[in-house]
Image 1 (spheres, rainbow, N blue to C red):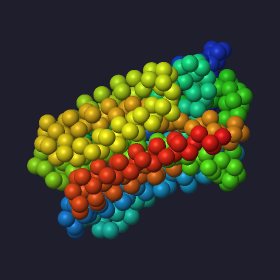
Image 2 (tube, helix red, strand yellow):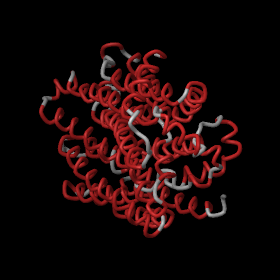
Image 3 (cartoon, rainbow, N blue to C red):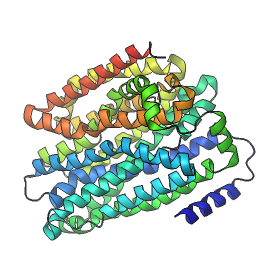
Image 4 (cartoon, rainbow, N blue to C red):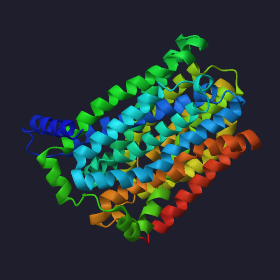
Length: 434
C-alpha cells in the first residue's frame, strides 16, 4: 500500500509540474469530482436500503419492520464518521494527505463494492446481517477519511465578494451523485423481472461505485499532491490538528456549526430516502417511476444550489440559511399532504423539496467555519461535517418512517419542522460565538 501510494503521489506531481499558479477553478474541479463519487456511493447504498436489503437480509419480518432494521444499519455509517476522523486525522498527521486519501478511498470503494457480494439471509443466515453492518461501518469510517480540506481551501481562496458562489460548488456533488445512482437503479429495476433484479441486478450499481472512486482518487491526488497546493495548505493553516485538543478549544463552535444546517440536512433525507420508502411500502407504484422522479427533481436541486451562490453573495450566507429554514418550516406544514397525494402530489413534493434543499444545502457547508481558530480549522471543519450529518441526517429516514407509520405522515412534517427550529436557534446563538 505504501509503495502504491508513493507511486500515485509521484505520478500526480509529474502530471502537475507545469502548474505555477493555484486558482479556485482548479480546486473546484477536484472538489466536485470527489464529492460526486462520495454521494454516488452514499445513494447507491441508500436506495438499496429501501428496495433491496429488507427483502434479502430481513425476510423473517414484514416489509415495514425490515425497512426499520435496514435504516438502523444505514445510520451506522454516520455514527462511525467521527471515529473515522480520529483515525484518518492521525494518518494525515503522520503520513500526509496522499496516504490518507488513498487509504480512505480504497476503504470506501472496497466497503461499497463488497456489499454486492454479500449472500442473502436465506443463504448464510444472520451472518449476512453482521457482514452488512461491518461494510456499512467501513463506509462511514472511510467517508470521514475522504475529507481533504479542498472545500475549505476553495472558500479561503475565493474572491472576497464571491464566497457564496464558491461555497456552493462542493455541494453540487450530492445531486450529481443522486442523479446517476437513481438512474442506474431505475434502469435495472425497470428492465429486469423481480427474480433477476434481486438475484443479481441490484449488485451492478455497487460495482460502478468502485470504478468511480478510482477516478476520484486520481483527481484529488492530482491536486493535493502538488507542491503548490501543499504550500497553500500550510500557508492557510489548514494542517490537521489533534482531535481532542480541537474538541476542547473549538467545541462550542463545532456544535453550533453542526446544528446550523440541521434544517437542510433533515430535508436532505426527507426528499431522498424517506419518500422512496413511503412510496415503496404504502403505494402500488413501482420504484422505477419514483426513482426517475427523484433524478429529475435532483436536477432542479442542482440548479437551486447554483442559485444559492448568487443569493448568498447578494444577501449573505447567514441570511439565506435563516430564510430557507423558515421556508422549510412552512414546507413541513403541507409536504405530508403532497406526498400522500398520488403521482402528481409526489412530483410536486419532490420538486419543491429539492428546490428548497438546493437553496439551503448549497450554503450549509462550513457556514460557520470562520468561527474556528486558524490552527484548528481543518480538523474542526471535518468534525463539524461529521456531527452535522450524524445529528441532521443519520437517523432521519428511520425517525421519519417510524413517526409516519405510527402517527401518520403529518408527524414526519413535524420532524422536519423541528430541524428548521434548531437551525434558527443555532444561527441566533452563533452571532456571539467568536
